[in-house]
Length: 285
Image (cartoon, rainbow, N blue to C red; front, side):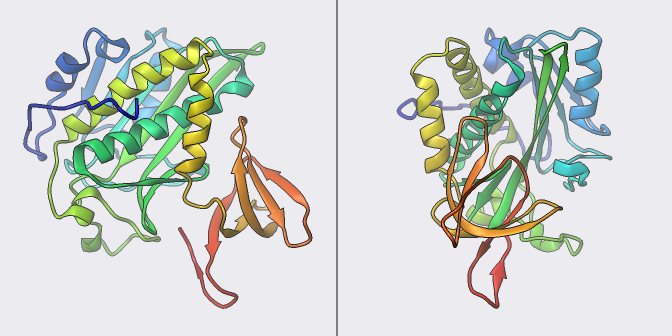
């Protein structure tokens, strides 16, 4: 997919999201079968999980201009201005064991950063475990949720919030450095174009992962290449401990390998990570 260029011809006003443009552009692919749009919703992930439990088909997409109860990782709130950002979730019913679900979060994140670069020209990175960053500021977040019954995955919902045409500097309530495509480029872009590009890439990647082809290894390599923290001294806080070391790699299970100062190798599947800039000054990413 690195050499493939996906161009869009239609630019819709950033203030008016048009799901029909997305649906017509991604047909007859996996994500063009059932696209649901809501002007306002509690959470696209929560809404889509309910649909999944009711038997919604794989490839269902839920999009909203505003979330009244948007969710981030660890139950945190996701704040977004109405009509300016991209808020959506997709439903998959993968034929993969539960311990292989990370690969789907991975290809979702890669589709996101590739779509951002294709449409806006901006080079974003992935901050383990599930954020999209540009420089030291958060551009987007991913929330993965899935259901397992008797060892079999019933469904998986991938949700993304991506800051597109919003100006975060106007907000006084943000708790961490935040950016957007507009803030970085001073140009507004089509949210429809980004979503179309992303869904087309995800469709291809999901098919390749399902084949368990050699291409899957390439996804892992790219994920590590696009990591914001690898090779840097970081601090991980898990809620139970605070560990410092060098971020050495992310494995096939999504675990971050940390090399501590005494040479021990530790692996973490989740936690809050900050890059250590100096002994007296840490810059949180």
